[in-house]
Image 1 (tube, rainbow, N blue to C red):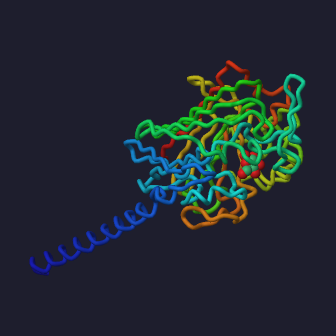
Image 2: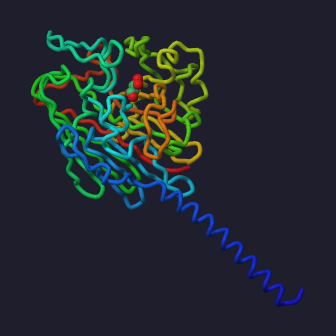
Length: 386
Ligand code: BGC
């Protein structure tokens, strides 16, 4: 082969390599383009006569969070995966009106004034019995029909990295006592942490248990089930439940049970085990009692890893428990942002909180709040890759 033909083969190969690389880049760009925050125009709406909007938070590392003031909800949470490709790791809708639906599975809102269940819709404080709506079998779930997830909050964008939502619930709303003022601040920082800081005050003795109800899929919304995600929960005990998912009041060790997530384990590994607790929950739908690790006032609650994306989420919280719900009631009832439906176990919730039904369980950490006190709690969701 003469010098000239060697040179032409070399040029041809270089062109081929170049075009292949371009191809890969294009695919990556295409994916990046597909994964973007929802259109803010679709969130400019009026619900219950009040204005709804979309708010965005961004850090310097490309993490983006979209929130709406309807329910103070997380709509999108975009982070890069192990290959630098963006994924939206929470389930949600791409227009405000889709959230205004009683069938909506609590995608991303603040739930309260009392997250999770209160048995038979009743509790007593100072000898007064309060009656709440029974919106989940015989029990009250997530503050009743018109809980904080259905409130139009006032919003203030504090900076590119922080937004604050406030609202007031009047005395007797959904049966709970006290004129109550709530403040929730969402913020991001350059360590890829999303922090949710909660505050509330009341003018009458009441009970409060606030959390966020995001459905996560760390492989990306609509990418299949969460059963191959790896999960570790820093909890040696759970609060076992009865058939209506009300805690029995006992604490039960997780060792040698399907609830042992003390080391990283695939969520699907033991989920079909023959275990009364899994039968009651139709899978995992339980409060884990967090081991007190308290670094900087926070318990290290859990680590979740997307098996396809390598995205890691660590949750730190001031709360004593975390509800792990494996999406067992998801049943293709609604259409998500990217066009997929909410199929069985395609998202999971990890809700830092006080224990369910605490107002009726004297042995659980108290959820009572008095006038003059400030209810305060914080949870941090830290994203990285492996
Ligand atoms: C509860 C589930 C419930 C879900 C509602 C979770 O916090 O533990 O039982 O079905 O919220 O979407």
